[in-house]
Image 1 (tube, rainbow, N blue to C red):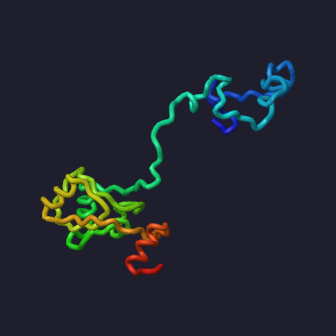
Image 2: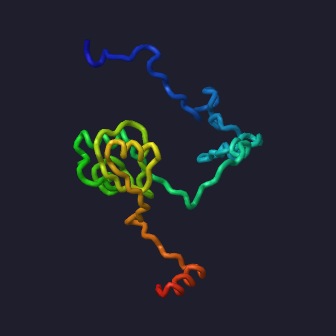
Length: 179
């Protein structure tokens, strides 16, 4: 067998329809786009338009809201913490902080802090300094002989800005601090 004898199986390759190649082709002249109007032109896609029927984004009711003061935490499970200790990423004898969790690769982003969840099992005695923990997670850490210190820590890249409202200025003036 030579290279010039190689061929695909019959029906394996479907040829594309060549539009605008004369009336005999069945797709000549307007190439199946009809006559005139917005949709016969190039580069038109009317997103969300359903032919006059009420579109889906207007049929479905609005629900919920975005809480502008809501906090987004990075989550760490007890099982994930134990796995990191077993693999040598974390040293259980030293206090485990949020920055240490990020630098060791246990979490990807600090966001507004780290929250410990009670899924999984923790055997190591650890001292944690994080932004939040569930009751079950705190109980499991204390049962293993460790401790959880919950503190709302300000992010390095987003400093805490002092309020400059009238009430805050009056309170600072009364306290004797000027800013």
